[in-house]
Length: 332
Image (cartoon, rainbow, N blue to C red; front, side, top):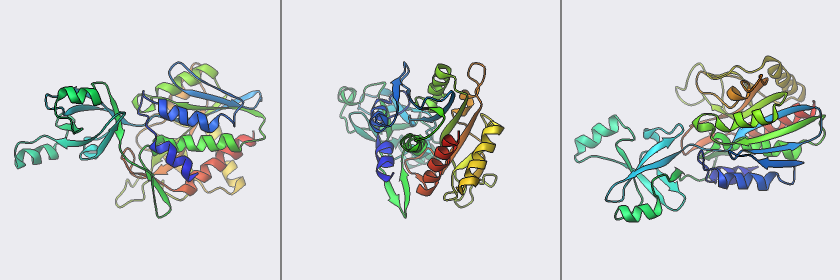
């Protein structure tokens, strides 16, 4: 599992540019499914089993990033976020584009101006330095329209995993392992690795419309409120198992699916926690609204430092999520 998570999180794949991560996932699943396809927007849809009832597991394979919007005469790049990237988080970090890596700096002609810009930081004041000497050189390395991601690598910290793009490559890792482990089920299991979740839940709506499953479960990350002075209304923490989502700002999970997930966890002795998220949302929001409606829910992996270069997860929560979903599916 450690090596799989490392490969998935270190892969390049901002929203709309998921080619590298898509190829990596296909290599992992191709020998463990009955078939698969890549649809017109770039989603992977795989299937396994021949049961009459269709169940969909979905995780998005894109990650947050940036796109180059302009280049000045000295070769410095201007950027816009692709998904939920904060200027405070990205400042002085390294950004990896497809052909070059750069450092994010901030404008300021005097110490006072720099201090002012730091206190009211915005992408209008930030630039990326890729070492180019002029516009022409920069355009060869990262032309306008180039996408970039955090230049951050996987590390293990006291047994916990830290990397960029745990959101939602850890969900992808869970579904890959479920596909490998589920052997005997009376359903048809569909697995989607969807695109462009971070910019509007784009891919999942296409997948759902394509197959219209009888039920769907999104696998994603959620906030972990176990750091100093974290959000007091969030109960989710690292190390207490998968979080079974009741609701977030975008959707309310189907009650019957929740009850079945809870019953499965208790029957198998799998630690779990209940999740009510006071912000955000997952692909479940579009899955449940597709055509005439799909009963949908979310199972989450608690994660610290979301949408940063150093998202942290607990491996036992991941294993618990895999066991929960595999047991749920094999139970029909």
